[in-house]
Length: 147
Image 1 (spheres, one colour):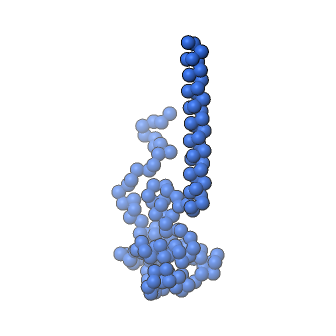
Image 2: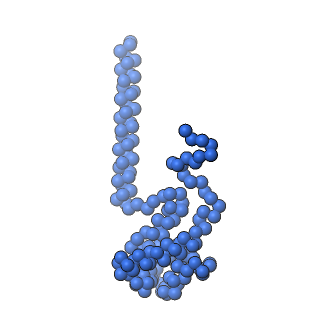
Image 3: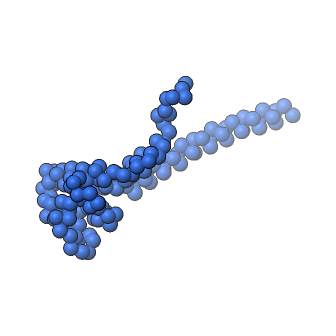
């Protein structure tokens, strides 16, 4: 039973004004991932900047990367191209995943996982079709036996 004042847990969250105004969250995500890359994979800020520069085909400074992690530098947000280069440089889709979550609970999946999800969906559809086919056959058999 769903009361008027209780939200449906399985429905998409409605868009909220300012819901994508998440500059602080982006900066924090970049900072956390830089630290995680340092601790888990030994990547320095310098090596991340070098990899980003490689992917972009242009020079990028460590100061620029640092500015993306600073919540105090208002108006200094990472561009989409540089966000893609950041994800590529650290080998993880953290900013892409943040974008997907912000767009309504979506997730980033690999091509292989996407194919598996499609297979599962097709399998479910086949089962539903088989059930419907059996029901129609039963109805037709019943109708024909009455004649």
